[in-house]
Amino acid sequence: MLIVGGGIAAYKSLDLVRRLRERGARVRVVMTAAAQQFVTPLAFVSLTNEKVYDDLFSATDEQEMGHIQLSRDADLIVVAPATAHLLARAAHGLCDDLATTLLLATDKRTLYAPAMNLRMWLAPATQRNVATLKGDGALFVGPNSGEMACGEYGPGRMAEPLEIVAAIEAALQSDTRLSLPGAEQGALAGRHVVVTSGPTHEAIDPVRYIANRSSGKQGRAIAAAAAKAGARVTLVSGPVTLADPPGCDVVRIESAREMLDAVERALPADIFIGAAAVADWRVEAAAQKIKKEQGAAAPVFSLVENPDILARVAHAPNRPRLVVGFAAETSDVIAHAREKLARKGCDLIVANDVSEDSGVFGGDENEAHLVSRFGVESWPRLRKEVVAERLVARLAEILREKEAAK
Ligand code: CTP
View 1 (spheres, rainbow, N blue to C red):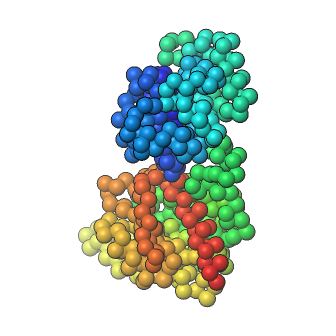
View 2: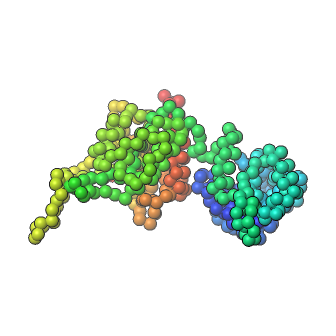
View 3: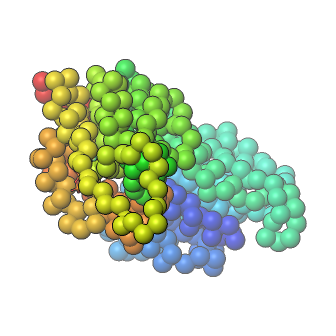
């Protein structure tokens, strides 16, 4: 739950909501009357897809969900911006509006992100209130020092949205019962995960090649997320300009056949994730650079099919328990994914729309559909790192279920 106080920093809370939503969090917003002088409730409604609460005495809100239940429904209460007035009221247990009533009624932790003029922040009364709240177990992030909206310079600027997100993640992780989706620690400890990623380059001659627009970002993010979840990760990557993900064994290859070779050498594994955009065809490469002869016809190439790495792994005698493919499609995404699931013999297909206007190929976001024989699970548009974390968390879950069913 995000309580928005009345300060100019309230505009940053809109970005905070976006950052939390990207990470899969559900955010319910409560605004004070003063907050609505700076940002409209409609802006938060649009970003959260949820009703925004602002009235302690609303008969309809009380009937739908009483304020006591509202205060306990959240995993964490975040107050951003926390103004001097809001801190003072919270420290003294006043409850003269919905925001302060929730702060008094909640049984969850509270994280304050103060924002105010530096003199107001440094005032003994504010410092006493902060000390009281800390003594009661409240968490604080910021304020930062810097130039203020009022033109003065010093402490009082609200922490940046990503700093607040980090403080939220730390608060949730320190509470062992809770975590943001995907943040599960050690879910893949002791497992070996092999990931293919990036494009392949198929040589035409020593200087030319056939390639595609894959950036390798999604595969790299998956490898990083699997390593973070405790797995030993082998990333077999085609030519990309990205840095190696931390904690992974990276094998760099160029062609589809080299990729197959590297994957076969990396097996056995518990999970195989084929995120690479493998070239379907190659040409028989010329040993020397093909020269442009005066007056001669343009060269004609006939294409030879490349091995299907995913299908080979799915049918290998040492098949990993979980084989996951990707389907990059420009139309009928789900139907094509279902067909690929069956044709390639894998357990799960992560399908996405890579048509030109989707911005997925080479971009930072992805809209994924998880297609298995049990059905389709569609995720909203998320950053590729978030898709990776969620996917890893789901795979860990599916693996555990499979093993339990055995
Ligand atoms: N794949 C693979 N080896 C290939 C081709 C594809 O391992 N030679 C894997 C990809 O890494 C991905 C999945 O298969 O996980 C689907 O790739 P895609 O190119 O969408 O499928 P294709 O089989 O090539 O089908 P089409 O191009 O007809 O859509």
